[in-house]
Image (cartoon, rainbow, N blue to C red; front, side, top):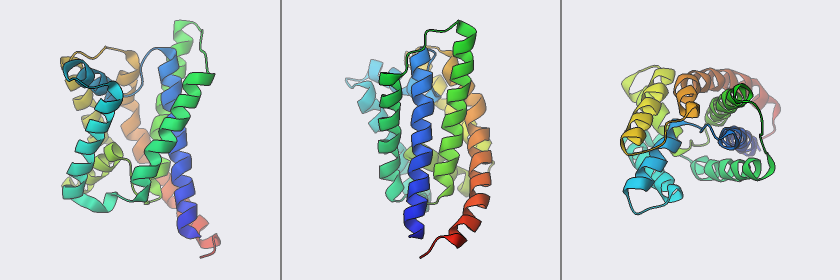
Length: 203
């Protein structure tokens, strides 16, 4: 029962990520830095953006397997499904025809949801999505601040994506700045909150 509760929280966190990504996409201002890298790879290789995302995920998971496989689990497979479902729902159902400044506010809100949702999912310790798992694995192995590791990875993805021909948009810039710190803060907060909750859940 306790593990089921953890998986449920993990899926909720990943769903929040999907909502955040969807909000960013419908503004037309872009989402996180990974999207820039996917677009750049798709422009240079004979693959689609979706296939580029799978390629990057595979590389991340391979790296995590050798660095710290404890970051992987069943939720490593389940979370991307929840994220993609809610991203698609937002893109299909939400139309944003607002002034530019309001769109910027929506993008920042979406980026915040990505960071917070990622932290919730990570705090459950049921397995992390590839890119998040890589952030935690590198932070733990190298004894570096999680927020700085994530910001560094986001910056690397953004720069590589731009060099490969990805579009420059504001969303990924906000993502580089905000997602790392929000991921760290929300994962720490949720870890503290989950512990007493688990005491009330039956085995």
